[in-house]
Length: 395
Image 1: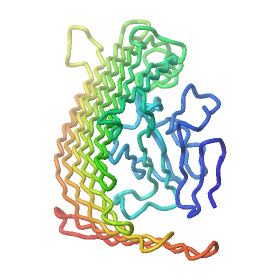
Image 2: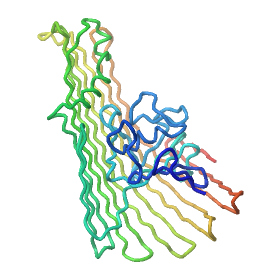
Image 3: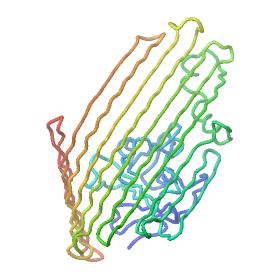
Image 4: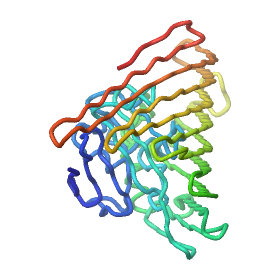
């Protein structure tokens, strides 16, 4: 049995009670939202919330947000929202179904300890090109899907950009007030009660999906995404004693290639390789004396990460409602962090961290439904961390 319209139209719970599926194109826009935001929609589900009231900070059953993994078409996503987490980085027009796991995480996806969101692109079954556009008070987007290769393939493109660098709308001003009024810049200095600030934000997203099915057994899929966000924030007290300048630039990019093949009716395989790149650059300057830079505060932080992830899964289904998955996953991760702080009141601080990691994982999962009252699910995963010379067994 599948529970349809759980909380609202387009949200359902499967018969295994292991996941909640959200159909973005079928669901209604929730009250208070201007579009079908998947991250804000997930927060209405029991056990999922956001302690900082943002779209990107998902907390599953009280865990921290970094314990929840997000994938878009098998691509790991490390920056799910813009403007300090307040605006989702996923374009609703390009999203199809989303699988939300909050009771357990399938052994196929290692590393997540609390929750998992698998975001899949929109499937279009149309012999004609599709063109859609949307506009709200923070951004506008466009979506198109075109068939090719005699309807054996489909290519879809979605693009979005903010326009608040041109027009500061009431919605954008409300978000800015929420973020910066009474902020650290004002409270810590204690110089004046009145700060005038001007924040300029530019963000843009681009999604590309191409599917091709040359025959009845093989299917190829290529996906790519790019997301950019640039913030320029400037504040000044009413007596012109302190001027604060902050810049925060974030860029994420990723690509995935998936090959699915059905060898026979009972046996199929899936090979998926993804690459994700995350880059963040933050700068804060507090100017106290225009002609004396020694009295200024300076903070600079850069954080870059690359993740190459490859996964192979073999699925054997001897009969209906019974499936055995056996697979292997490999990850190569490279991360570096640089912090540089020069403070007028405190001692200067510099730190640089660079690390690489390789993880091998093998997994096996079985699910069987014997009747309406009895079903069994068993999973086992073994990870080997090469740099640590250690391993871990998960059930």
